[in-house]
Image 1 (cartoon, rainbow, N blue to C red):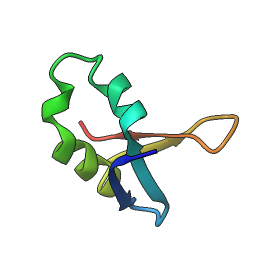
Image 2: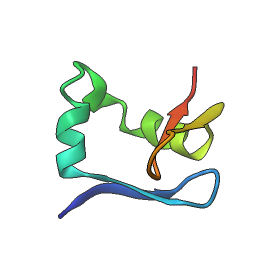
Image 3: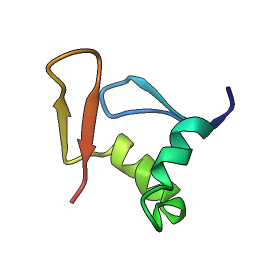
Image 4: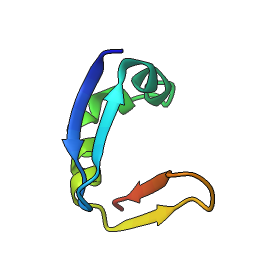
Length: 62
């Protein structure tokens, strides 16, 4: 599986965006132009909310 990018988030977790995940991101019209903003949100979020199950997190930057 090929990655679009791989970075370390604010909490030290390694995060990667795969080509398959990117296909979902670009379903949201215009998001293909915001790769740098996505990276910045992962590195410097204003808020991180964990899901109740699993090791999933939502990153927010308003």
